[in-house]
Image (cartoon, rainbow, N blue to C red; front, side):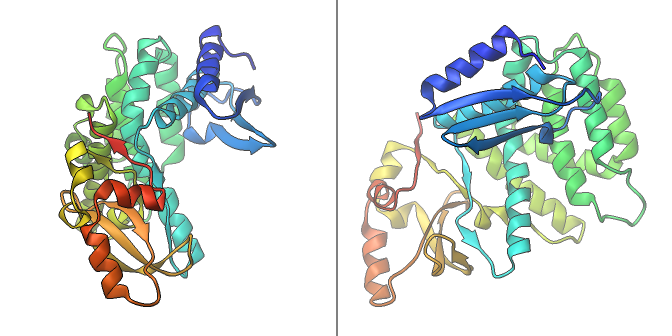
Length: 319
Protein backbone atom coordinates (compact mmCIF):
# COMPACT_ATOMS: atom_id res chain seq x y z
CA UNK A 1 0.00 0.00 0.00
CA UNK A 2 1.43 3.34 -1.08
CA UNK A 3 0.77 6.74 0.50
CA UNK A 4 0.92 10.02 -1.39
CA UNK A 5 3.62 12.63 -1.02
CA UNK A 6 1.14 14.94 0.76
CA UNK A 7 0.31 12.22 3.31
CA UNK A 8 4.00 11.66 4.03
CA UNK A 9 4.43 15.42 4.37
CA UNK A 10 1.63 15.53 6.96
CA UNK A 11 3.26 12.61 8.80
CA UNK A 12 6.48 14.63 8.96
CA UNK A 13 4.57 17.62 10.35
CA UNK A 14 3.09 15.43 13.10
CA UNK A 15 6.56 14.13 13.94
CA UNK A 16 7.78 17.70 14.41
CA UNK A 17 5.34 18.27 17.29
CA UNK A 18 4.82 14.76 18.68
CA UNK A 19 7.12 13.99 21.66
CA UNK A 20 8.37 10.77 20.11
CA UNK A 21 8.19 9.05 16.74
CA UNK A 22 5.09 8.36 14.61
CA UNK A 23 5.28 5.80 11.81
CA UNK A 24 2.71 4.98 9.14
CA UNK A 25 2.03 1.53 7.75
CA UNK A 26 -0.52 0.11 5.31
CA UNK A 27 -1.83 -3.40 4.73
CA UNK A 28 -4.91 -5.18 3.39
CA UNK A 29 -7.00 -5.18 0.24
CA UNK A 30 -9.57 -2.67 -1.02
CA UNK A 31 -13.13 -3.51 0.07
CA UNK A 32 -14.83 -0.50 -1.50
CA UNK A 33 -15.99 0.57 1.97
CA UNK A 34 -14.66 3.23 4.33
CA UNK A 35 -15.08 2.86 8.09
CA UNK A 36 -13.18 4.43 10.96
CA UNK A 37 -11.99 1.06 12.27
CA UNK A 38 -9.84 0.65 9.14
CA UNK A 39 -7.15 2.77 10.79
CA UNK A 40 -5.65 2.15 14.22
CA UNK A 41 -3.03 3.79 16.41
CA UNK A 42 -0.91 1.66 18.75
CA UNK A 43 2.35 1.92 20.65
CA UNK A 44 5.11 -0.14 19.05
CA UNK A 45 8.00 -0.01 21.46
CA UNK A 46 8.89 3.67 21.69
CA UNK A 47 7.08 4.54 18.47
CA UNK A 48 3.45 5.32 17.73
CA UNK A 49 2.20 3.18 14.85
CA UNK A 50 -0.62 4.43 12.63
CA UNK A 51 -1.82 1.49 10.53
CA UNK A 52 -4.32 1.58 7.67
CA UNK A 53 -5.82 -1.87 7.08
CA UNK A 54 -7.92 -1.26 3.96
CA UNK A 55 -6.65 -0.08 0.57
CA UNK A 56 -9.92 1.56 -0.52
CA UNK A 57 -8.74 5.11 0.28
CA UNK A 58 -5.47 4.85 2.23
CA UNK A 59 -4.61 8.55 2.00
CA UNK A 60 -8.04 9.57 3.28
CA UNK A 61 -7.86 7.11 6.19
CA UNK A 62 -4.27 8.01 7.11
CA UNK A 63 -4.72 11.77 6.93
CA UNK A 64 -7.91 11.58 8.99
CA UNK A 65 -5.96 9.97 11.83
CA UNK A 66 -2.95 12.27 11.42
CA UNK A 67 -5.07 15.42 11.33
CA UNK A 68 -6.88 14.35 14.50
CA UNK A 69 -3.48 13.89 16.14
CA UNK A 70 -2.40 17.35 14.97
CA UNK A 71 -5.49 18.93 16.52
CA UNK A 72 -5.02 17.25 19.88
CA UNK A 73 -1.30 18.07 19.87
CA UNK A 74 -2.24 21.68 19.09
CA UNK A 75 -4.38 21.99 22.22
CA UNK A 76 -7.83 21.11 20.96
CA UNK A 77 -10.06 19.61 23.70
CA UNK A 78 -9.61 15.92 24.35
CA UNK A 79 -11.94 13.58 26.18
CA UNK A 80 -10.67 11.62 29.18
CA UNK A 81 -12.15 8.86 31.28
CA UNK A 82 -11.37 9.27 34.95
CA UNK A 83 -14.40 7.44 36.33
CA UNK A 84 -15.30 3.77 36.49
CA UNK A 85 -18.19 1.74 37.83
CA UNK A 86 -18.16 -1.70 39.42
CA UNK A 87 -19.41 -3.09 36.11
CA UNK A 88 -16.29 -3.17 33.90
CA UNK A 89 -18.26 -3.98 30.75
CA UNK A 90 -20.60 -1.04 31.31
CA UNK A 91 -17.64 1.30 31.90
CA UNK A 92 -16.02 0.11 28.66
CA UNK A 93 -19.26 0.63 26.75
CA UNK A 94 -19.66 4.15 28.15
CA UNK A 95 -16.09 4.98 27.13
CA UNK A 96 -16.55 3.71 23.57
CA UNK A 97 -19.88 5.48 23.04
CA UNK A 98 -18.68 8.75 24.58
CA UNK A 99 -15.62 8.68 22.30
CA UNK A 100 -17.81 8.07 19.23
CA UNK A 101 -19.99 11.01 20.26
CA UNK A 102 -16.99 13.29 20.85
CA UNK A 103 -15.31 12.64 17.49
CA UNK A 104 -17.72 14.33 15.00
CA UNK A 105 -16.91 17.78 16.45
CA UNK A 106 -13.20 17.33 15.66
CA UNK A 107 -13.98 15.76 12.31
CA UNK A 108 -15.95 18.84 11.32
CA UNK A 109 -12.51 20.41 10.99
CA UNK A 110 -10.56 17.45 9.61
CA UNK A 111 -13.13 16.49 6.95
CA UNK A 112 -13.10 20.07 5.64
CA UNK A 113 -9.30 20.09 5.64
CA UNK A 114 -9.25 16.83 3.69
CA UNK A 115 -11.76 18.22 1.19
CA UNK A 116 -9.58 21.31 0.76
CA UNK A 117 -6.67 19.05 -0.24
CA UNK A 118 -8.68 17.03 -2.75
CA UNK A 119 -9.03 13.89 -0.61
CA UNK A 120 -12.84 13.89 -0.51
CA UNK A 121 -13.46 12.61 -4.04
CA UNK A 122 -16.60 11.08 -5.53
CA UNK A 123 -15.05 7.63 -5.00
CA UNK A 124 -14.33 8.40 -1.33
CA UNK A 125 -17.89 9.65 -0.78
CA UNK A 126 -19.27 6.46 -2.31
CA UNK A 127 -16.97 4.30 -0.17
CA UNK A 128 -17.96 6.26 2.95
CA UNK A 129 -21.65 5.69 2.21
CA UNK A 130 -20.96 1.99 1.58
CA UNK A 131 -19.28 1.86 4.98
CA UNK A 132 -22.33 3.35 6.68
CA UNK A 133 -24.71 0.95 4.94
CA UNK A 134 -22.55 -2.06 5.84
CA UNK A 135 -22.30 -0.99 9.49
CA UNK A 136 -26.02 -0.57 10.13
CA UNK A 137 -29.14 -2.65 9.62
CA UNK A 138 -32.28 -0.91 8.31
CA UNK A 139 -34.75 0.31 10.89
CA UNK A 140 -37.67 -1.95 11.74
CA UNK A 141 -40.91 -0.87 13.36
CA UNK A 142 -40.84 -0.98 17.17
CA UNK A 143 -37.24 -2.25 17.19
CA UNK A 144 -34.69 0.16 18.62
CA UNK A 145 -32.05 -2.40 19.55
CA UNK A 146 -29.50 -0.63 17.30
CA UNK A 147 -30.88 2.88 17.70
CA UNK A 148 -27.84 4.23 19.59
CA UNK A 149 -25.37 2.80 17.05
CA UNK A 150 -27.40 4.22 14.17
CA UNK A 151 -27.51 7.65 15.78
CA UNK A 152 -23.76 7.73 16.46
CA UNK A 153 -22.89 6.52 12.95
CA UNK A 154 -25.31 8.82 11.16
CA UNK A 155 -24.25 11.90 13.13
CA UNK A 156 -20.73 11.33 11.81
CA UNK A 157 -22.20 10.80 8.33
CA UNK A 158 -24.03 14.14 8.59
CA UNK A 159 -20.77 15.89 9.44
CA UNK A 160 -18.92 14.14 6.61
CA UNK A 161 -21.55 14.86 3.95
CA UNK A 162 -21.57 18.50 5.03
CA UNK A 163 -17.86 18.73 4.15
CA UNK A 164 -18.17 17.15 0.68
CA UNK A 165 -17.29 19.62 -2.12
CA UNK A 166 -20.33 21.16 -3.80
CA UNK A 167 -19.47 19.69 -7.20
CA UNK A 168 -20.09 16.15 -5.87
CA UNK A 169 -23.75 15.09 -5.66
CA UNK A 170 -24.44 13.53 -2.25
CA UNK A 171 -28.23 13.24 -2.62
CA UNK A 172 -28.12 9.61 -3.78
CA UNK A 173 -26.39 8.69 -0.51
CA UNK A 174 -28.27 10.91 1.91
CA UNK A 175 -31.55 9.75 0.36
CA UNK A 176 -30.50 6.13 0.93
CA UNK A 177 -29.77 6.94 4.59
CA UNK A 178 -33.16 8.60 4.96
CA UNK A 179 -34.89 5.60 3.37
CA UNK A 180 -33.11 2.93 5.43
CA UNK A 181 -32.91 4.82 8.74
CA UNK A 182 -35.62 7.53 8.67
CA UNK A 183 -35.89 7.94 12.43
CA UNK A 184 -32.16 7.93 13.19
CA UNK A 185 -31.24 10.09 10.18
CA UNK A 186 -33.70 12.77 11.31
CA UNK A 187 -32.48 12.53 14.91
CA UNK A 188 -28.87 12.86 13.75
CA UNK A 189 -29.91 15.97 11.83
CA UNK A 190 -31.35 17.50 15.00
CA UNK A 191 -28.08 16.98 16.91
CA UNK A 192 -26.07 18.19 13.91
CA UNK A 193 -28.04 21.44 13.95
CA UNK A 194 -27.38 22.09 17.65
CA UNK A 195 -23.64 21.50 17.12
CA UNK A 196 -23.43 24.48 14.73
CA UNK A 197 -21.03 22.48 12.59
CA UNK A 198 -20.28 25.25 10.10
CA UNK A 199 -19.00 27.43 12.95
CA UNK A 200 -16.52 24.85 14.29
CA UNK A 201 -13.03 26.26 13.78
CA UNK A 202 -11.14 26.46 17.10
CA UNK A 203 -10.90 24.80 20.55
CA UNK A 204 -13.83 26.77 21.97
CA UNK A 205 -16.25 25.90 19.15
CA UNK A 206 -15.14 22.24 19.26
CA UNK A 207 -15.77 22.20 23.02
CA UNK A 208 -19.20 23.76 22.55
CA UNK A 209 -20.11 21.29 19.79
CA UNK A 210 -19.06 18.25 21.84
CA UNK A 211 -21.30 19.35 24.71
CA UNK A 212 -24.18 19.92 22.28
CA UNK A 213 -23.70 16.37 20.98
CA UNK A 214 -23.62 14.94 24.51
CA UNK A 215 -26.83 16.77 25.44
CA UNK A 216 -28.59 16.05 22.16
CA UNK A 217 -27.79 12.34 22.31
CA UNK A 218 -29.28 11.96 25.78
CA UNK A 219 -32.35 13.98 24.83
CA UNK A 220 -32.92 11.58 21.94
CA UNK A 221 -32.40 8.53 24.14
CA UNK A 222 -35.06 9.86 26.52
CA UNK A 223 -37.44 10.43 23.60
CA UNK A 224 -36.89 6.83 22.51
CA UNK A 225 -37.25 5.47 26.09
CA UNK A 226 -33.68 4.19 26.00
CA UNK A 227 -30.93 4.52 28.64
CA UNK A 228 -29.07 7.83 28.63
CA UNK A 229 -25.33 7.87 28.06
CA UNK A 230 -24.79 10.71 30.58
CA UNK A 231 -21.48 11.65 28.97
CA UNK A 232 -21.82 15.14 30.45
CA UNK A 233 -20.98 13.63 33.82
CA UNK A 234 -19.08 10.47 32.86
CA UNK A 235 -16.62 11.85 30.28
CA UNK A 236 -14.08 14.48 31.29
CA UNK A 237 -13.83 17.06 28.51
CA UNK A 238 -10.73 19.26 28.64
CA UNK A 239 -12.03 22.65 29.79
CA UNK A 240 -11.73 25.75 27.61
CA UNK A 241 -11.59 28.76 29.91
CA UNK A 242 -10.98 32.49 29.63
CA UNK A 243 -8.21 34.20 31.57
CA UNK A 244 -10.89 35.77 33.75
CA UNK A 245 -12.42 32.38 34.59
CA UNK A 246 -8.99 31.01 35.45
CA UNK A 247 -8.51 33.81 37.99
CA UNK A 248 -11.89 33.32 39.68
CA UNK A 249 -12.42 31.18 42.79
CA UNK A 250 -13.41 27.66 41.79
CA UNK A 251 -16.88 28.09 43.35
CA UNK A 252 -17.77 30.69 40.72
CA UNK A 253 -16.94 28.46 37.75
CA UNK A 254 -17.63 24.87 38.85
CA UNK A 255 -20.00 22.85 40.98
CA UNK A 256 -18.49 19.83 42.74
CA UNK A 257 -20.75 16.78 42.67
CA UNK A 258 -20.24 13.45 44.38
CA UNK A 259 -20.76 10.49 42.05
CA UNK A 260 -21.45 6.83 42.70
CA UNK A 261 -18.52 5.97 40.44
CA UNK A 262 -14.90 5.55 41.49
CA UNK A 263 -11.90 7.72 40.60
CA UNK A 264 -9.89 5.34 38.41
CA UNK A 265 -6.63 7.06 39.38
CA UNK A 266 -7.01 6.83 43.16
CA UNK A 267 -9.57 4.01 43.47
CA UNK A 268 -11.43 6.27 45.91
CA UNK A 269 -14.87 7.84 45.91
CA UNK A 270 -14.98 10.42 43.10
CA UNK A 271 -16.11 14.02 42.96
CA UNK A 272 -16.82 15.57 39.56
CA UNK A 273 -16.31 19.26 38.75
CA UNK A 274 -19.22 20.29 36.54
CA UNK A 275 -18.98 23.61 34.71
CA UNK A 276 -21.70 25.98 35.88
CA UNK A 277 -22.39 27.15 32.32
CA UNK A 278 -22.87 23.73 30.66
CA UNK A 279 -22.84 21.08 33.40
CA UNK A 280 -19.90 19.32 31.74
CA UNK A 281 -17.40 17.17 33.66
CA UNK A 282 -14.18 19.20 33.50
CA UNK A 283 -12.07 17.30 36.04
CA UNK A 284 -12.35 14.63 38.72
CA UNK A 285 -10.91 14.68 42.23
CA UNK A 286 -10.88 12.54 45.35
CA UNK A 287 -11.32 13.99 48.84
CA UNK A 288 -9.10 13.14 51.82
CA UNK A 289 -10.46 10.65 54.31
CA UNK A 290 -10.44 13.25 57.09
CA UNK A 291 -11.38 16.94 57.38
CA UNK A 292 -13.47 16.89 54.20
CA UNK A 293 -15.48 20.05 55.07
CA UNK A 294 -12.25 22.04 55.41
CA UNK A 295 -10.89 20.50 52.21
CA UNK A 296 -13.89 21.54 50.12
CA UNK A 297 -14.10 24.99 51.72
CA UNK A 298 -10.48 25.65 50.76
CA UNK A 299 -10.98 24.12 47.30
CA UNK A 300 -13.94 26.37 46.49
CA UNK A 301 -11.91 29.47 47.44
CA UNK A 302 -8.85 28.53 45.35
CA UNK A 303 -8.42 30.15 41.89
CA UNK A 304 -9.37 27.83 39.04
CA UNK A 305 -5.94 27.93 37.39
CA UNK A 306 -4.23 26.95 40.64
CA UNK A 307 -6.54 23.96 41.14
CA UNK A 308 -6.10 22.70 37.59
CA UNK A 309 -2.33 23.02 37.76
CA UNK A 310 -2.18 21.30 41.16
CA UNK A 311 -4.09 18.23 39.93
CA UNK A 312 -2.36 18.18 36.53
CA UNK A 313 -5.57 18.69 34.55
CA UNK A 314 -4.84 20.08 31.04
CA UNK A 315 -6.93 23.06 29.96
CA UNK A 316 -7.19 25.44 27.02
CA UNK A 317 -7.14 29.22 27.38
CA UNK A 318 -9.92 30.71 25.30
CA UNK A 319 -8.63 33.34 22.89
